[in-house]
Image 1 (tube, rainbow, N blue to C red):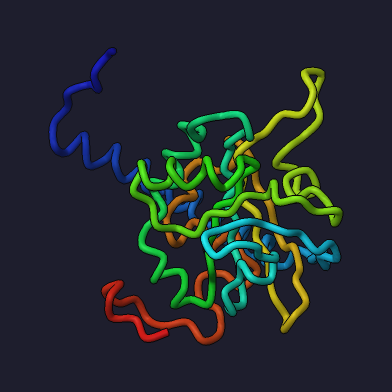
Image 2: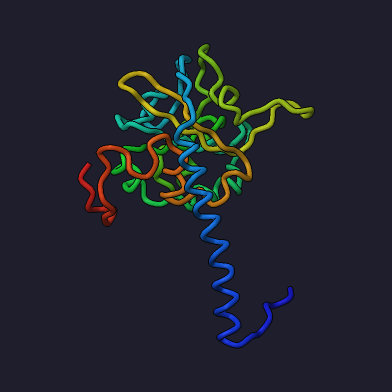
Length: 218
């Protein structure tokens, strides 16, 4: 691997200022893109999906835990696997304490096709405490992974891919607002990165100012 060129402090500062101008342009473009994302139309979710979690059977509405927004991590974990996808695991490792999301009226959950009996020991092994549900619970109301394109048809048959889907709740009505998959997840594990995908953005109504995660009152 080649190392960067060695220069004087003045040369470095000039090069850094030139790069900073480009970084500012990228930041501004990202802000404009975020505004366009929040203006995307939404689709009502009519299917009554059934999941299995730590408290048994759950609906998509249950996954909101009473909050206005829900971010779902489509965690690749096939029914026959003993452990989850390493890339999805690295992504989940980056998700910080959920108190920060919850204080912003947003819930987070991982969903996989593996049965909950396989998810539970792997979750314990990784030391995660995030809500994690199996979408393999017997249901005639639709396939969550297929409907939200985390499982797709290919010439090799059904293929799973990592993704994030965002949902918005209006009382008992649930709406799908956004999804992103594969390489689109790069850099999204942070609080700001996840909130930027949602319809309400970083400061939804009722959100709290940043605090230590054990000081939130919600």
